Length: 278
Image (cartoon, rainbow, N blue to C red; front, side):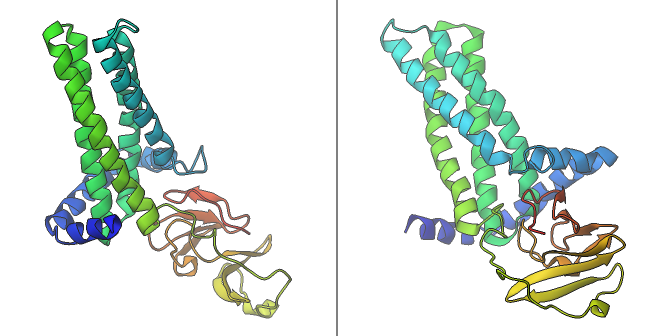
């Protein structure tokens, strides 16, 4: 019921369409401003080039744990002499530092969502942006060193932690409710044995062909190195690779421009992070 209510509320928020367009345009403009470095930077922040896995969700656990630890430390320091006030401040600072990275990677991923998926992702992003501002303000008040501001800083951190829980619920809904950034090839099953998909002359040099391998859509490409085959479904969002473009041994998905090697299925460009089975 909670998931259904969330979708019902967001479906009535027409203003989110305009906001979503503007945020996506702004993020795209930032990457374009980096010129030739834009693509490698996006590959890095998507998790494609180094981690081979979505980077944003890997970063989000650190701020949650740090801020929870910090709030517990705050109340312990305020009510007892067991630990110093600096314990909560250090935990809060760690969470803010990593949250900055989570924000950058989150807005990077936001470029490739649409519809209700985008509205939910926007609600998540805006919520966590407010959290970042609240936690940063709490940190600044602590660093000022005025005792009268310490209770205010604790109150802000407590509010920020509660808002973090709500924001992470929305983030989880983006992934588990809409399947954002999951591996689209994880549930595909092909034949256990070799099957015929055509004659040799059916696959001209350098031409992409979609074939059916016992129910599995497969992309076939003949090149000088031989006849190659990878799953035709883009691992990022399920786009049909055969409708994309081919440059050398690299195919670009027509939906969000993810890139794969037709030779071994490796990811060559974001937003995809999971390789294809060759």
